[in-house]
Length: 126
Image 1 (cartoon, helix red, strand yellow):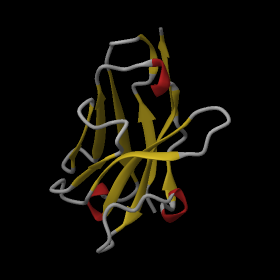
Image 2 (cartoon, rainbow, N blue to C red):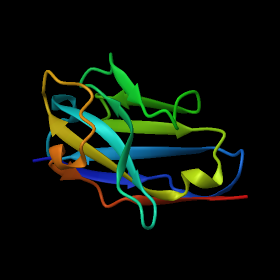
Image 3 (cartoon, rainbow, N blue to C red):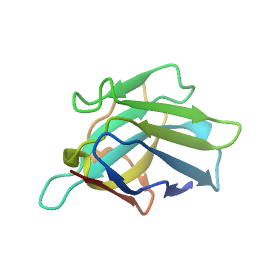
């Protein structure tokens, strides 16, 4: 079983940047595809970005394309999400989640990810 801990959230002005990190323990993260989800108040949790086990395949929601970059360092057991050009609509709790290897990528449904971090809040002021 893998444990996940997110960090890097905070308050930033519109146009600013944040870098979220997801650190894994318990098992090597290289066995898992990882997704970054977000959930704003009153909204459903949505997949923002995902990366496959070796980092060779990535996915971005339309809202993230051109602004966010996902990466992973399997030697360090971490996955990061660089977020640039942030706007108030990006305000949400952000979660990293992991799922074991599957031939299907990306998997968008949050119910398909058995392992979750506790979340980190991102607030973008206008």
